[in-house]
Length: 249
Ligand SMILES: NC(=O)c1ccc[n+]([C@@H]2O[C@H](COP(=O)([O-])OP(=O)(O)OC[C@H]3O[C@@H](n4cnc5c(N)ncnc54)[C@H](OP(=O)(O)O)[C@@H]3O)[C@@H](O)[C@H]2O)c1
Image (cartoon, rainbow, N blue to C red; front, side, top):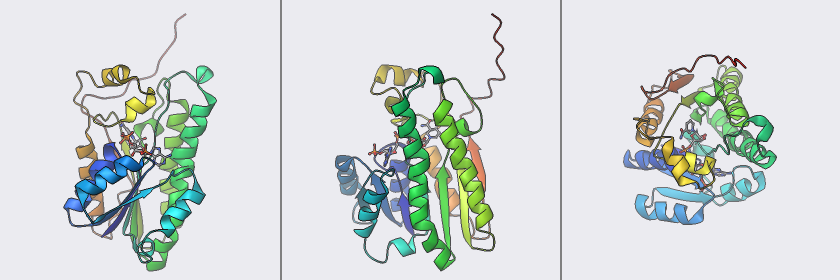
């Protein structure tokens, strides 16, 4: 199969790209960091095609896609929309507007850009699977998740709305909604390089790993074509629901 995975320079995307390559597929992997992409190409070999661009920049995306072999884009079997980030954990009234805009531009606009470029090809060949990496943050509010959670709620509803539009087409859409996952750069990015603060998030918790998420993504890609897993929410066993909070001042 031909697979396009966004955000392969670390975390889930890196593992997903490696596992699809190991299973014999061809992977175009994207990200902004050219050095990480080059390193990955060394590791994964000639069935890995690196593509450097910012998903929020549709012009850069178009230039990057134009550089691919002409037959690749029209023949993508699986698109994994994984690139994304959280920035900050401050309450909304103290959050940085630039952080909010970056999250919106990356997690929603970026995901929409890539989907808009690939979906018509899938519909034209009446075959394909889009796997969107959303989050439990899109399902449940938590302190400081404000815009991050809202962008993931967008991803989840966009996935379901794609399903609605794809009535009668053999193009599938699955939304993966992970909870607390470690072994990625997610918290290092969220806390802007404060690695001590980031590592505390995962202290004494057996978190969901990139391998766990990658196994789920490959399982989704290996479902028979008449089966659509609409959404799949996954948490570590150690994580559960906080309940509603009451302030007693
Ligand atoms: N870790 C968790 O607990 C968790 C839980 C639920 C959902 N998620 C979601 O899972 C996805 C992957 O997260 P992760 O934990 O693997 O984090 P990660 O290790 O930080 O990986 C994020 C990836 O996204 C790419 N990316 C970020 N902004 C981008 C942009 N503007 N353009 C292109 N690529 C961009 C990064 O590449 P470059 O920096 O090279 O561009 C990187 O490869 C994200 O959508 C995240 O929201 C994570």
